[in-house]
Image (cartoon, rainbow, N blue to C red; front, side, top):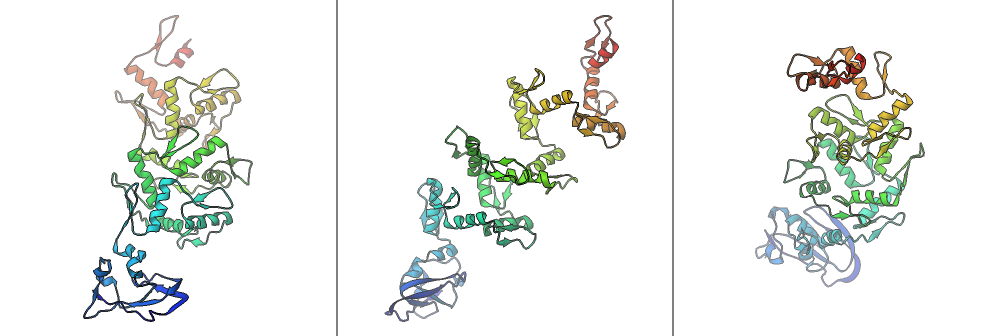
Length: 418
């Protein structure tokens, strides 16, 4: 496209507010200037080519015959904003070579390498790389949430979070991992995810040797050193080091369970509990022990299991000398002292100290026998009886009476016989 640059009142020297408009994106702004130059792009017989002023458009039809006001003779050439439309990225980071169309974006990006956060909140100790982030953060102190979702009743303190939230309605996940099939609604979530492939943990604790893939995880971890628990429940005396833990705790008061399984009717107060529950449908067990062949659907069960290999039993009963490698086993053991049977059958008056015993018992009502022997046609309602039965096919009857020599497959049968 051919263009000519016209100037009106180019000798006019005065300080005034000049209106800048951009016809490609309709972006506009006011600023105080000393020289006002009015430019108009139009077709002429002896033109100035767009290439002659140092800018190559991706699509020439993006320029229209509309008046554009700029300050200074070379403002169009230096107009950084135009680069965002034409794809030009002249600014490169010296540390990672990432390109930018705007110098200001390069400066902000470089603060990620240096850790510089020049914008300090005057109401707390948080600081930010960008002024806009500080402005958004200030709203968290006022609890104002001016950005409202038009499709549900949720509101947000900043527009970015609203934008990300809207994708939960549309299903939009534009950020695709190039190493697996996962995609994300937010670019920062993609960046964090990629570290699961690389194993990169750039955020290091300066008080211990732990490192984290996400800065948010480091911030949360640091509170374990200080013991700080700034998030106080207003319904009880509990306090928490993390706000998300407080939010989850409050649901124990309200009974709210917003995370619904789409494969059954169960609902959960926490999203991680829903994720763990879904594995009961899929059979997925992503936590693999490297010392035996066991795998687990939950990380906490995996951590407890690893203690078995060390022989350590850190969970000590205060009423007797028994100790356990897992806290869950200690809790179950304590019920032998208290007589507590919290798991009540809803079809009869029986109650049990352990949930799995209740599940086994309920099968006596339903007559369900899900444990099938592959070597004969017998089936069983609980795993213990099934395990004992298998010994008949394998080791036989290991429990022998020391008075007559009679043998049994189960120890309790031997005890009853004696």
